[in-house]
Image (cartoon, rainbow, N blue to C red; front, side):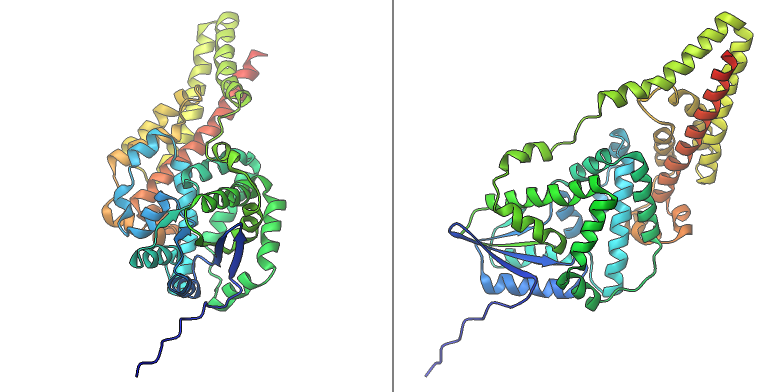
Length: 398
């Protein structure tokens, strides 16, 4: 005589939030992106609940990056440089490096619970919906929305976090998810970097909630970072589909900034023209030479500090005086392009870039990271040279 097998009981956890939305049930799982417990919980919930669909906090690009260990093959440096997205890529790598270091300490890859959700659903023939906003849109909206002085704060915090060696445990992650500490951290982010919180948290809460609601099925499991749970629960009860086009696009640069970007070139060229008319071509030529040296020397020194290719160093000297007179392209992009062409990164350097970012020497040892240095340091040199050269030329008018 056979005995009936009892159906498995749904797991109980404070990370599981059951939401009734009209005739639908949405099971919201709040996870930590570097937690073994989250991976196990996600697999268990999906296997027991057998939902009609599984939503994950990923866009296609992040999914490909996590699912494909050789995602470096998809990285087209030339295209990134052409679109002037090197700064965005650098911030992405800084964030990924910090998460990876946490994952290495805990023995789990960042985002493993999201991939586990997709893999478990696919094994059970359950449709998977990638519900997050395109990461490139998120990063560029965040960069555009953040004032320059807060960008400095952000980059400083990212760099400090990159070299942070403090320990973190599964117990610490559990306490973070189960207490009000996470809410306090988000509130602090809202006070210190309000524009950033709006883009990284609030807008994505709205986007994720609307995409979850658009996913077919009477029962859904949605796997999201714990920091999004409160916002998504609130947004699920609101109708905000009309906001999706607005928060899915990169806002254009303000016309005021476009005008301001041309002020320095017009001022310098106008001053040189005035000097030529009022004091003669010889004096104007001396001022022009000063401008070339004031821009070229700091930019080329920056390239030299980056241990760039000799032709990149020469390129920095040549490009800086000209790029400083146009907002279309900066000296750093010229030097980064030259460095990428003259010393392209090796396959192994793409693979270990996240590890090399955690050591100071790694930035000079890894050719991909050296491209970033060949972008940052000449840019700083050119910026310094622009102010020095500009001050000298304008002061000579009087």
